[in-house]
Length: 243
Image (cartoon, rainbow, N blue to C red; front, side, top):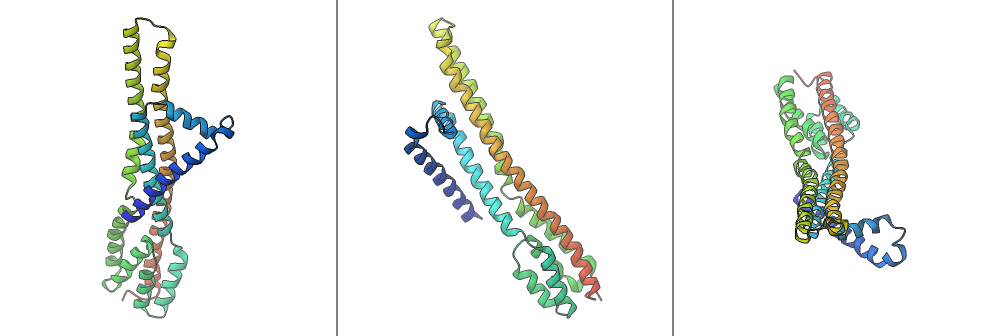
């Protein structure tokens, strides 16, 4: 998991700087038509202290999102085919073969079914208890890293708001120093202050979309786990595993 997360962080950093370099090379030709170029210009115009922190939140948040998406895609199992293979092994009286099928299949669903099969000789109650207990463990593994994504979703706009508040304070300090309330005195400071909020909200929106997608993936895997667990008990009872 740590290697995958490190790879995701490196990928996000390289992708960002690679895209920035490409856009810098093409800026002269596409500055008037590229929306991303305008976005980059506004990013540069903002306060670098808070913009850098917001950018760090985006890179780290995307790294955790990519790691979770890759992990969840790997964890997705065709439960119908898996149960059919287990059913075939149990029908021939090969409990060890059924356990081997579950053990050799990647994903949390197969791991839960393996724990259920491993406790088959202790009766249906032991099987259900093992499935519930190990299901909680697998649920925790599926949700690993989500707390960090939530943290970056919360921090990004807060950093933006902080930049805005500090920018407004600086604008009022400029008014006090000059003694004039003309728009030219404060317009630049207020513009920079508001840009930090805009980019903080953009980062939070991007990460929130990925977060909701990840939650939906986890919900789908959990539903398959529950269906497969119920199906396993039925398969074991039908093939006379419980005696």
